[in-house]
Amino acid sequence: MSVNIRIEDLFYIYESNNEPVVALRGLHLTVGPRECLVIKGPNGSGKSTLVKLLTGFFTPTAGGIFVGDQDIAKIDPLKLRREFVSSIDQRGNLLADITILENIALAYSLVGQTRSSARRSAKDLLEVHGFEHLADRYANQLSAGERQFGSLLAAIATNPKVLIADEPSGELDNTSAEIMYTLLKSHAEGASVILVTHDPRAEKYASRVVQIREGRVSEEWLPGQDEESVVDPFGWMRVRDTTPHPPRRNAQNLGSVRHSLLRGEHLNLSYGGKTIFSDMNIEGSSGQLIALSSGSGSGKSSLLRILCGIQDPTVGEVYIHGRSIRELSRSDRAQVRRESVGFLGQGGSALANISLFDHFGGLRVSIEPALKNRMNRPLSSFSGGERARIELLKILAEGKPILLLDEPTTQMDERRSLEAAQLLLDFVDKGGLVITSTHDEILLENADQVIRAR
Image (cartoon, rainbow, N blue to C red; front, top):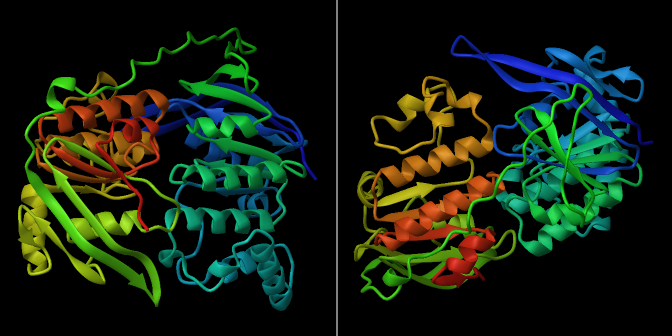
């Protein structure tokens, strides 16, 4: 049964490096029964903090959140997540050491089903939605998209009154994203659904869209309509943000002489008898942007790891500057990466407890004042989108000629995504090579080559 959600004058303040940080500042919002609400907003605007408050991981500094007539701050957090609210985030919520079937069965057992009944229910749920082929696989054997679908099925198994999805489609192709959003939207028939996302594809499935900026709701609109500024009960209103110009390549450099930097020949990858891709050939030269774009489970992330020598293919060879990677020792491969190849996988590489200053480690990085003023704060205090931007700025500053990037813009808001795309295009125009898995339309439109793993 769906319920009404009321968020009243919500504040959340935390301490970072002995300084107070205001993440939410008097936020007001309602979510109606059976509504599918999309929440958007710039990186660092308070969206992820709101999700943690809604799911009971954080407690409000002031104000309140009410599910029906109950103040969630007065509900035991375990009871809240068992009986009222389920959530999934971009990386999924699956336990790595049990199968997908067992993950979903565990969710059913939390709402009172016996072990045998829970397994039957889990099997039925997988079959109904066409994912029975994932039943006996572990989370670390799945692609990012497959983990997302497994996490969603585990979340809806508890039949929550409120279902929250934080960036559920960031690493999904258009077909998979449509399946994900359709499934989420259908759940809104019996529950309130909140989608926190930068993805414009989500709006078509929404009942309503709101934007959060600087810890308050700033705009609100219905799908297909123009944005309208919001004046909250205390008279606060945010001036609308402006969108930067679309990124573009330097036309003068498009015909420049190019030199081969990286080559993969007849690459094959198999897991447990299943072929992920076969006979893959790829060659990257200076001044090129190559995009890997295909469906979930096609091996894009694995291909990037193979190209930088972190993982070996089942069959095939990779050459960097004409030198075979397979012939190199582990330490020699690491040396090649230190000198020539920047690799950024999903989730980045940032250590959460070190400061931004220490993370850059003396590199000359051009950053905006909003980050510069927080140089002494730990990386854990930055939002997911901010950390993605930090990682990209760092890897660009290292000056390596080859960049292998796994979905580099997926956690960024529209403005930051456009800015990041321009940084990558500038790097390419100066003679660098970028090979990236991406669903970013700007990067796909500007790519010299789009490769679909098969």
